[in-house]
Amino acid sequence: MKNKLLILSRNVPPRFSGTSVVVENLLKGFKDENIVVVGEKFISGNSNHPKIKYNNLRYITILFNTNTFLTKLLRQLQILSGFVLLFFIVLKHRPNKVLVIYPSAEYLFLGLLLSKIYKVDYYSYFHNTYKENRVGTAKFFASWLQERVFKYSEIVFFISDGLKNYYNDNYLNHTSKFETLTHSFVEGISSEIDVNIYGKTKVAFSGSINASCEDAFHRLLKALSTFNNVEFNFFGNHEEAFFLSLGLKKDSFFIYSTLDRSQFITELKKCDVMLLPHGFGGDLPEIEYKTIFPTKTIEYLFSGKPIFYHGPPDSYLTNFLSDNKCAIIVDVKSEKEIKSSFKKLIENQDLRKTFVKNALLTSNSYHISKIIKNLRNKIYK
Image 1 (spheres, rainbow, N blue to C red):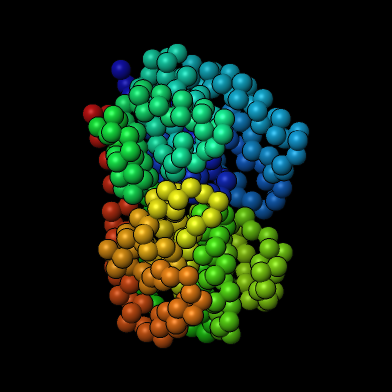
Image 2: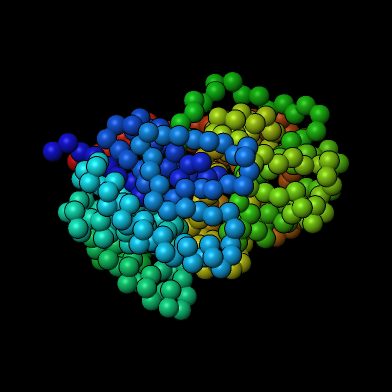
């Protein structure tokens, strides 16, 4: 029987999110061969939002751009209609393997149900903790579902060694199934390194500002906004009013919210410093802060520009950057230390070049060709 892989993920292109980028890179890596991706259609109110089309991308639910009572109700009803649509997609494409990407408990459940009905091999792919990130009745359901996902998965993939190590230590009955499948990039790596800063220092931040990085982000912003020659460049679905409310002057920042992947990488590489904040704490469980590996890290590694990292000393991400010597690290809650380290970075070209060389070397392990080869070897063995 010819192998065909079905990937289930709520977040898919063209939505601007870490998981969407992971999925898009997998689509490009498989090059339409024996793969179909099923996810949630992103409805954007912005007519300039990039339109991305793939022949093997299908939608079974809709992500609304508002959060009203009606849209919440429709979101719940979509689970049933989504399964009906998934039923027809499976009948048409006849996959014999399904890979479900979390975060999305509903998709984990749909994938598990699908694998039982159609007798296909089931694989799961966790980008965050699940049960540990729930409370109350939601945690009870998460415990029930997660145990079954682990039990029936042929392999349970994790997006980083940090996350996998946590599960290895805490779910001893399933450790033989645990594997790492990292994020990737599809672009080539430039052999030329240019860390010169021309005029203002352009700092870049990509992605969402949420509980995983919020406290560190605010501290970075407050410290760096005291420099007269710093220009902020924000990539993602951000609103101007938000940054103005934080005290930034209107002429000190730019927002890029409607770029496709190619445009995003081009604009990112025009910046001088990559900002990587990682939360010291907040609304998430402690284990999230210890294990999170933001997908933006990979883009930063091959950007050809130095990474300025601010995060706690006891997290996997901090240890990763420190071990690979590919970022300047501020691991204390100190605006004074942030200012001092930033000044050191922008005044020392050799230091910037050293960080970039190490980052590019580290990024080699994350090229899509290697990630796809690893995935094929695991599921098509």
